[in-house]
Amino acid sequence: MELIELPFEQDLFPEGIAIDNKTKRVYLNSLKSKKIVSGSIDGSDPKTFLKTGEHNYLAGFGMTIKGDTLYALVNSLTADKNKSILLLLQISSGDLIDSYSIDRSDFQYLNDLTISANNEIFITDSESNKSYKIQRPSKTIEVYLDSEKIPNSNGITISSNDKYLYFASNNGICIVEKASKKIINQPKEEYSSIDGLKFYKDNLYGIVNGWGNISQNGLFKFELNKTGTEILGKEKIIAFTEDFKIPTTFDILDGNIYFVINTQLDNFDGEKILDLKKLEPYKMLKTKME
Image (cartoon, rainbow, N blue to C red):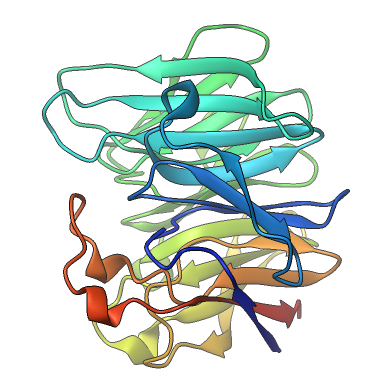
């Protein structure tokens, strides 16, 4: 394992992280500053990728990169005038490729996303039982699933063969056959409290940060059966200690997992910093996949 100090401002409060495989640059968003920063994977060369509020950017949530496109979810943090937006940004230039928005009277948080091989975008809503789908280049956001069996989903990922979606819901990890929208496993509560979730080499990896007892949290590997339709068990790869201050999402590069260990989200109430004296430099952990 290696800890990499990130020389960004200490009041970002980053929720999302994405890494460009081509340039080896890491992208972090900001809940407070409503912008995206980037830097080399070793922590050097910090830059602002997207300025505060540019292209109607709001508080940053899930991000992912495919090709030369950064897919970025943002939300307003208050229930009044609630708004959720997905921005597609060109990495090489920072230009806006496309934008999708949901503006409803009921409260929603578009939290995380995954993209299929044929450019279907699947998005979770952590404030409802809904998930959404966009089939590029369509401009329409449609409800993909609305099921009580998949409540308040956070992380989402897709199998390498594009057959199955994996939802990190309050009920546990739900496996859905993409084409039929059928839930094909029985979720277990012991596989809940997951934030970021990734499919990698026929298994799932997830950051568990929602348990009150810190000993239950950590970076986990969730073993799948050969068809990817059942979770056989879990293994804790990294145990979180008091130095781990609400890790959220992660990305994978060259067989290594990268995530910010100290997002410090508990020091930000959505409007203001609770204690300026507690701010500290952000640190990114690099660890080999198992």
